[in-house]
Image (tube, rainbow over all chains, first blue to last red; front, side, top):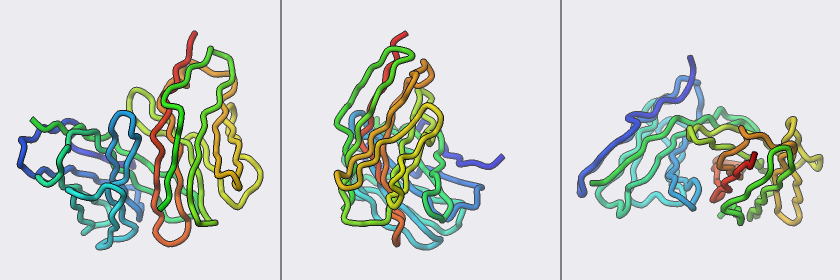
Length: 113
Length: 115
């Protein structure tokens, strides 16, 4: 079955450590997105990529990094520079084209302990 | 920069009644799409409806319809005959169709359906 897979579902990190969230899609979508969801703030865009080996910063990119070495993969690294990393993270992808729907993964809940 | 604002953090409606969720956006672009997504308690995002900025006719999908006012940059969602399964967070979203297709969301509105 086609879809987007985020792993792990729950992740715990100690302060000062980097951690990488996985996002894989087998939908052959060109565009991929990372969002952070906090209560009352909706979905805030961290990074997005339209094509392999290219990505752009979203509205809250500080403290995060990404790579897009393969079309199907768009991992997000939360670095120690991110001051408040505890949040729910959503990955999405969409096919190129006008008004195309974004498909979302199930999300990763990251908690800093 | 494009921004999307949902000014109603929470809304409630009686089952079978009609409710309207508000959304405004800010952009200097002319070519874009607007979307409403639903996030039920499972947290799985689901597309509800979409609207192309070039089309004057308001989009409809069964019980869901929009009121798109381009000059006012307003994009509200009307849910008719509300059902218990409509209870969810609803997010308004904007996507530019020129160049990088940045997809931006609003803060969300939590909709409660009262039986």
